[in-house]
Length: 536
Image 1 (cartoon, rainbow, N blue to C red):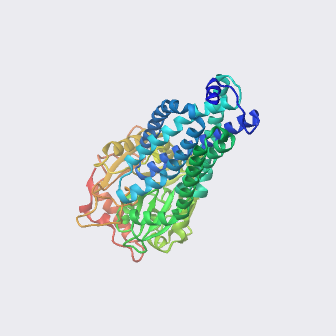
Image 2: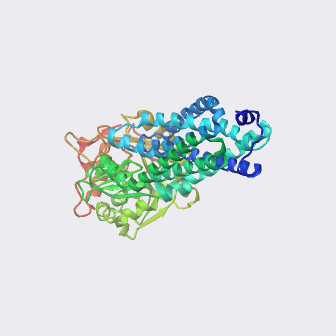
Image 3: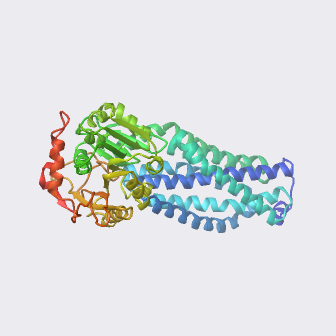
């Protein structure tokens, strides 16, 4: 009782270490716990964006719910101040278990239940409450160690907390993700959290613990570390099972690059699928419809020099290289792992017609926006084969500023073509892209192709389409063809009139020209079938 009264008054008491050492150890624990807490937050945001999409919404949900829960946790911690040491130890054990396993449970709920939103909110609440309870208890513990005014103690605690958050925030993208991946990284973080919290209480504050409390903390921390270690040992088997549940039984390649997760499924033209960050990017059964619709209308004019932005899978380049008078094709892909896969994987390289073997093609590993700023070449055709405009990470590549850079890169009669998303399912997105192209200084002609014909099936796209020839679904694909305006007269190219949408006859003319140059073994062009086409 005397010790508790001293603790509440902020006075120092007899501990197994000197006061200065004890204060340092408490602040070190604050640093570690803050780093782990921020890793949990970033893990939830990253995984929610990957599984659910719309990273802005998911980040807003996670952070707002977590901050709200931290306030609740701070209020609840008032009841534990008289038992600050054992309370802090149990809270850190619970936080380590919940935070460390959060990514695993979220992925499992999505893979087998098809829904992870409720689990996301639940984990955000639980982790927020536990993080919010840390500071009040640590405030009590640091005053238990050393005589210090409340203002100085708060300053020290928050300084250690903020620095720890900085380290955790930097460690997540630059260390944990590339070295361990999302699931193992979260489990490792939980183990570090449990070890730091348990060590502080069981060593520095062991004299504050009753024998029963000490046994409880030892058992709780060892159990948490054992559970996390077991999960780490089994995580590879879990990932394989979860991927089979999401992508089917034919997953051949699964790799986390520095940019995204790349999944390749299937072994032939009928089953091949390429997923980037969980979104179907290429479905072999209908990708030709997308890529022919994307490429050939823009190629119906000067096309000696062609620039492909994105399109690391080589499928847009395949269509471009059908034209024998193309002198050079430059593919700018942000993820070199995708271009490497397109070069070396037998099924994908076969699908792209071994485009990367063509001496006319040059691959560049760079962000398209940054690369365009530095590039000084002019191109007859620019093909924007980028992730879906609905994916937040690609927003800048659909901005007026980006299209201004493209306009500068176009030759005098050059053309740009952009995949702008399905106009019927997401009309606001489609017409925003079209308006952004016009704001970039270009004249536009929108067009689209309908979705899969009745009875048509493609590779599973449970995680949602991402453009690039992914399964279209009934909404189809929408495109915008654009070119420089003539002075004093709006037009696509020098003085050409601008109709409401690209005419079907012009599409067929481009497709028939490409048909004569078709690579052996390719399926017939869908562009020569008028029933697939409608004006936008």
